[in-house]
Image 1: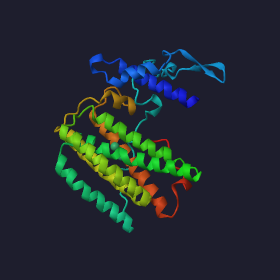
Image 2 (image 1 turned 30 degrees about the vertical axis):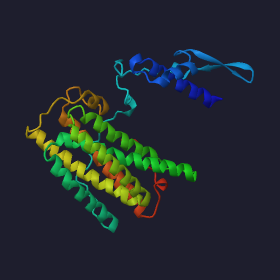
Image 3 (image 1 turned 180 degrees about the horizontal axis):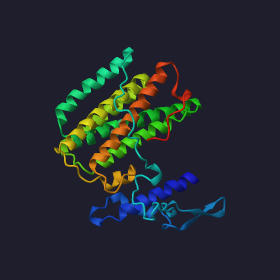
Image 4 (image 1 turned 45 degrees about the horizontal axis):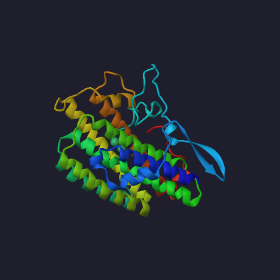
Length: 307
Ligand SMILES: [Fe+2]
Ligand SMILES: [Fe+2]
C-alpha cells in the first residue's frame, strides 16, 4: 500500500508538471495522467482507506528544506553544500611527496598516468583555468566508483567498510566542488563539453573495470594522477604570479567552501585546491599500500575528517 501511495504521489507530481505546460506543447498522454492521479496540495494531508479505515497520510511535498544560517546570522545561500561541509584546506601539506614505484603495479600505474598526460598537455597547453576545470570532471569519478563498489561489497558480504566508503565519497564530492568552483571562472567551449562527455564515458567504465580487477592498481593510479594534479596547479600558480592569468577575486562559492577571507583571490583558491589534491594523493597511495600488504581497506580505519 505504502509503495503504491508513493508511486501515486510521484506520478501525480509528474502529471501536474506536465499539464502545467502550454497546451500546444502538451503530449497527448498528459491528459490521461491528469484524470487518474490525485495528489494533495503541498503541506496538506491525504486520506486513504486502508482495511476499511480512513488513515491520514502526510504528503511528501509538505516537507520543506531546512533553513540554514551562518555564524553571523546571514542566510546560507548554497543548496549544493552546507556550512558543515566547509573547511580550511591544510596548506602545510607536503607537496613534493612522490611514491617511488617499486612493484610492477606501481610502474604500470605511473606509466599510464604519464602517457595520459601527453594528450592533455597538447590539448590544453597553458590554458590552466580550462585545464583545471576539465581535469576535475575526471578527478571526481574515481572516489565515486570506489565508494560505490565498496558500498556494494559491504552489502553483499555483511561487513563494515572501516569508514572507507565515506572517505572516498567525500573525495568525490570535494573534487566536484573543485569543478563547481572553476566553472565560475572558466567557460568551457562546445568541443570541450563534448570531450568531457566522451572522456567520462570511457574513463568511468575503465576505472570501474580497473577497480573490480585490482583496487591496488586503481588507487595507485589515482595517487599518481593526484601527483600530476599538484604539478598542474603549481604551474597554474606560476602563471598567476607572472601575471599571464588574471588574479581575479575568488568566487563566492570558494570563499564559503574553504572559509577564505572575503578579499581572497583566485590564487588563494588554487592554493586550497592544490592542498586538497595532495591529501587525495596521500589517501590513495595509502589505500594502495594497504592492498599491497595483503590487507583489505576495512581492516585499517579510513582517514576521515579532511575532504
Ligand atoms: Fe581536484
Ligand atoms: Fe584530487
